Length: 357
Image (cartoon, rainbow, N blue to C red):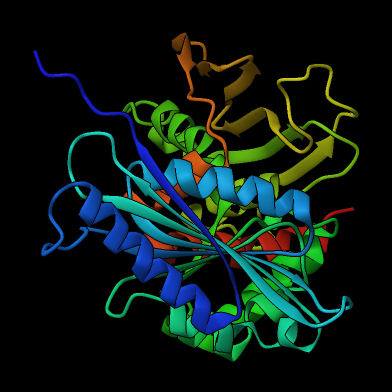
């Protein structure tokens, strides 16, 4: 039985943009020489991953996430800490993380600390470090102004921009801005939203609840949609879920069901993050009958209940994977989903938030 070699790490520090590229090349050569294949080449990235941060804590979080993603998607990963108010400088830590399976697959991690005037011109810094002809993802951490995230330079540079609309304090303004930028850029803007990804298990269970033939007619009779989330504010997540239903079912703002989206207060468990979805209830009435579908979060499970006019009843518990940022990004890289469905959800959500009390 063969023993898998431990992952190898090579590290260098560099000052200045040209030094970063030089040290990356040197690390590759060092890895090949140490493996006895100096005339070969290191099989590296299948993608470029760029994480843009504004504080050191975010940068540390991004580094850990990108290395985790690199285990499935070997990447050239750039973590950029931009601090325009600090004295001008460009310092970098460059590391090469080789797989432990005997292959030459690697993840290259470049941590760039950019301050002063250059921090306002990150596109010029990033572009020379990207691997040509590879998909490029830009992950915008935290809640920086969306106008910066969706600048023309950023949109033209990347295949997909990854944001978290749920991280912004004002859900209505955030969803409206996203909608405006989608109209502005059209198909040129590839967009992935971690808040949208977090609603996936809820969307799946709601769709399955109405999958039975006896349940489907009630989709057109929905009178009330109630969504509860943890925390002291309502983020974008529940509105995206409501928007998905409204878009799929063609709800009109003046004649749709009553939509009640509220926050329940501070999370009562360390396992429940601020803004996490907790409950979804759907009520439908028509022809003298009543139908109800409910989803309730219990730890890592969703408890689903269905009562269709008293004739079709079911209850089950579905375990959902606890997915962190790295897991969400890795998932959307493997399966980007249908952007048109997300676009429809955003458009419908904007109208719903606008009319919310």
